[in-house]
Length: 57
Image: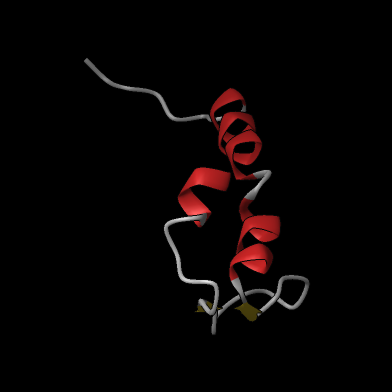
Protein backbone atom coordinates (compact mmCIF):
# COMPACT_ATOMS: atom_id res chain seq x y z
CA UNK A 1 0.00 0.00 0.00
CA UNK A 2 2.99 2.29 0.45
CA UNK A 3 3.66 2.38 -3.29
CA UNK A 4 0.00 2.98 -4.05
CA UNK A 5 -0.23 5.84 -1.57
CA UNK A 6 2.91 7.40 -3.04
CA UNK A 7 1.00 7.93 -6.30
CA UNK A 8 -0.93 10.70 -4.53
CA UNK A 9 0.18 14.27 -3.90
CA UNK A 10 1.48 15.18 -0.45
CA UNK A 11 -1.65 17.29 -0.05
CA UNK A 12 -4.18 14.57 -0.92
CA UNK A 13 -7.57 14.81 0.78
CA UNK A 14 -9.75 11.70 0.95
CA UNK A 15 -13.32 12.05 2.15
CA UNK A 16 -15.63 9.24 3.18
CA UNK A 17 -18.99 10.94 3.79
CA UNK A 18 -20.80 7.66 4.51
CA UNK A 19 -18.15 6.14 6.78
CA UNK A 20 -19.39 4.54 9.98
CA UNK A 21 -18.93 6.47 13.22
CA UNK A 22 -15.80 4.49 14.16
CA UNK A 23 -13.99 5.35 10.93
CA UNK A 24 -12.49 8.66 9.82
CA UNK A 25 -14.57 10.71 7.44
CA UNK A 26 -11.64 12.76 6.17
CA UNK A 27 -7.94 12.10 5.73
CA UNK A 28 -5.48 14.84 4.91
CA UNK A 29 -2.04 14.16 3.51
CA UNK A 30 -0.29 11.24 1.89
CA UNK A 31 1.01 9.83 5.16
CA UNK A 32 -2.49 9.84 6.70
CA UNK A 33 -3.80 8.00 3.63
CA UNK A 34 -1.04 5.42 3.92
CA UNK A 35 -1.65 4.87 7.64
CA UNK A 36 -5.34 4.34 6.95
CA UNK A 37 -4.75 1.87 4.10
CA UNK A 38 -1.62 0.02 5.18
CA UNK A 39 -3.45 -2.94 6.72
CA UNK A 40 -6.04 -3.12 3.94
CA UNK A 41 -4.50 -6.19 2.23
CA UNK A 42 -4.99 -8.17 5.47
CA UNK A 43 -8.63 -7.07 5.58
CA UNK A 44 -9.15 -8.36 2.05
CA UNK A 45 -7.43 -11.67 2.84
CA UNK A 46 -9.50 -12.04 6.02
CA UNK A 47 -12.69 -11.39 4.08
CA UNK A 48 -11.76 -14.02 1.50
CA UNK A 49 -10.98 -16.57 4.20
CA UNK A 50 -14.42 -16.10 5.78
CA UNK A 51 -16.44 -15.62 2.63
CA UNK A 52 -19.65 -17.59 2.34
CA UNK A 53 -19.87 -16.94 -1.39
CA UNK A 54 -20.33 -20.09 -3.41
CA UNK A 55 -20.25 -20.40 -7.16
CA UNK A 56 -23.04 -22.45 -8.68
CA UNK A 57 -22.24 -24.58 -11.68
